Every structure is written in C-alpha cells, then in structure tokens.
Image 1 (cartoon, one colour):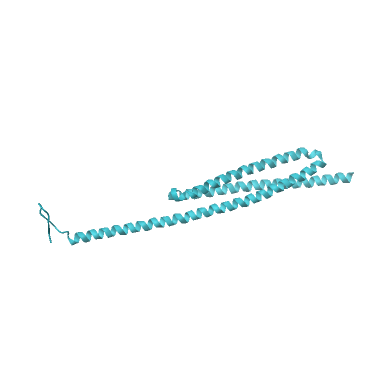
Image 2 (cartoon, one colour; image 1 turned 180 degrees about the vertical axis):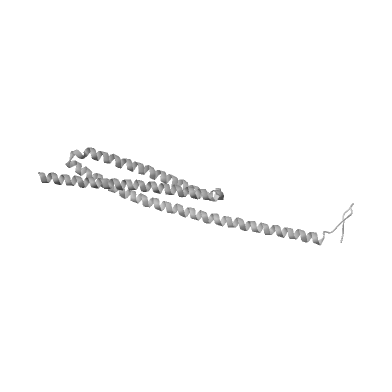
Length: 194
C-alpha cells in the first residue's frame, strides 16, 4: 500500500525487515540498559555494606575510647590517692619534700600529656564520624581502600599512644608505692631506734 503526498511522489512503505531490525536494535539497547542498571545497583549495594562496616568500626573505636577513659580516670584517682599518702608522709618527715615535688611535677606532666592526647583523639574521632556522615553525598569508591587504611592507621596509632601513657602512669604508681613502703620502713626503723 502506498501513500500519496500532495505535490510529491509516492513514499515507499517501511519494509518489514527494517522494522524488525529497528525492533531488535531497541531490544538490545534495552537489555544493555537493564544490565547497566543492575551493575549500578550492585555497586550501590556494595557501597552501602562498606558504609555500614565503617560506621560499625567507628562505634567500636568509640567503645574502646570510653573504656580507656574509664581506665584513665581510675588511674588518676589512684595517683591522687598516692599523692595524699605522700602528703601524710611529708608531714612526718620534711626531708622528703623535694622528692614529692618532683613526683608531683611528673604526675602533672603525664596528666597534661594524656589530656592533650585524649582531646586530639576526640577531635580526630569527631572528624572521622563527620566524614562518614558525608559519604552518601560525596563518596568516591576509588578512595575507599585508602580511607579505610588511613582510619585503621590512625586507630592503631592512637591506641598505641594510649597504651604508652597508661603504662607510664602504671609505672609511676608503682614507684610511688615503692617509695611509700621505703618511707614506712624508715619511719618504723626510726621509731625502733628511739
């Protein structure tokens, strides 16, 4: 069947083969688009899983930080108790004042360093949490391995530094206890001689 145009010749009717070819091409493009959509959905699912893992890691770091803070408070309380014991000993023997002052300075220095370390840790943790909150908007999958490695390194560095400071406090407490025992022995010996 032919169609007539005014003032022109007859236009040929589209051939069945052309229509079928066009249909096959559109179907192929549809399959490609569907495959691309599936790939994008798969990548999105993987990124969401990785985000959940990162947030879980942040929660674990927060839990470790809270535990360390509790241990630090306990150690600080023990240090303060040790200081009070030393004060009582100094009232009995004035010759120990210089040594006590030295230990007080060391304790304050350790406390100050630990406070600065804790503040730096909290700031870095807040920055890390803020970065994770923004992942849905500015996430780049190519940067994920580097970001994970960087976060893990920061966590290990901070935990190592925390352990060093706790070890220093523990050693200082042991030295205070040893000095207290020595002082008690000296006092006992002085009383025996009297």
